[in-house]
Length: 293
Figure 1 (tube, one colour):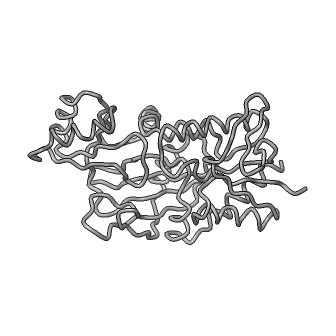
Figure 2 (spheres, helix red, strand yellow):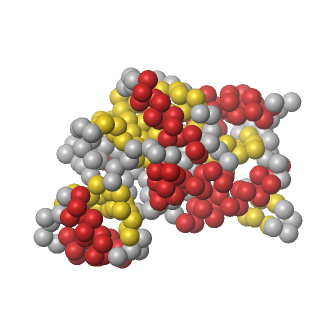
Figure 3 (spheres, rainbow, N blue to C red):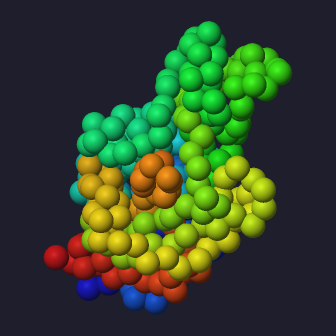
């Protein structure tokens, strides 16, 4: 029996198309779904995109629910819950991804699991924000919804216009997420898991004087062989979220390893370029096994 699996992502983007290719090679069925084009009819119980009712598919794989993280993306995930209620398997389940897209929700869950993280302050008060910056010496102000360090601002406590920059950040981000700047030593790690099982680890190595190592800021992927203890930390960090495919962002600091976040959708490109592993093929095989069980 041919299984019809749709890929929710960004049409034309490499990782989305790679996943769709993997399913097409295995089933002959290909459907890339842009949630911006989806229409939910609650009375009819349908979720239509490009003429296909997603509620009639055998499964959906979440690669990207929106090009940019935002509260609007959460609404798209809520729409997908209708398909789940109709019996469609979603990988990863929409409700679990919802807990990750808001940076604060992810952080609270990680701290609740006693996962080591950088010192972090969350406040709406500019005076408290300034006090946190003074305490940390240098801090990264992070939007609650962002990826690849977009919208993040690095501030030093002795910056002459620190108050003005804090006020400008707050104007765009009423709830301020403030994290002490970590010493990344020029690289950090992406630790990949499939269904809770360890797959591989890649490094993101800075090629510039940027304060972050993201590929968006010029970083490059490289292979990395973690210790068993580091793998255990990554496994503990991703465990509370119950995701199908994810990457745990880890930094090795002079004070020991810390976790920044757990990815809602995982690093397909990092797994391939850093580790030589075709994550799309692994995910496709896992999903087809699950929906055929």
